[in-house]
Length: 198
Ligand SMILES: [Zn+2]
Image 1: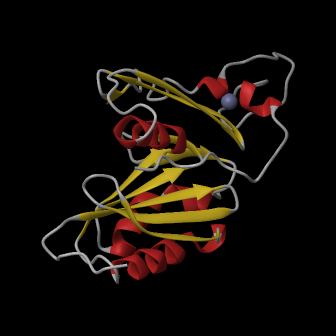
Image 2: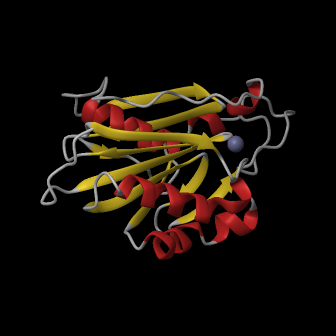
């Protein structure tokens, strides 16, 4: 690839997807410049994120921020990962703060379905629309709502999480604390929904 001009700001998107870590550098238009994919080092996640970010900075050193798509529930008010099947408690606890410290960059955490929905809204299937409902079927079921160009997270911060609708009151316990959530009805997989591309 060609080295971008230093005056342009780029962004790094990271998806923690089941057993994989996917990362990409994108420009202001959402065009992907570089990609990385490697096995997820769940117990060594901060160091892995820092290494991948540093590696991508070789190709674009003016990085405005890093966005991390979390396979789990995220409280955007507190920047905390509330629950995740893939990230242990100690890793979840200070992921936001530790990732900022390790990369030296602004970091935003977002639920993976919300992040994917926003990607589709900006540069994918939802381009040109103001309102969008997104549903992902990969390792579980996720959903997100965009209304008038904004992610609709509701009072709970979890609006659009259709995977956590109870469909079996006798069902297994879910990471959200409910039982019989829709997302639990799928067989466990290690795949994940594909990203939007511009
Ligand atoms: Zn649930």
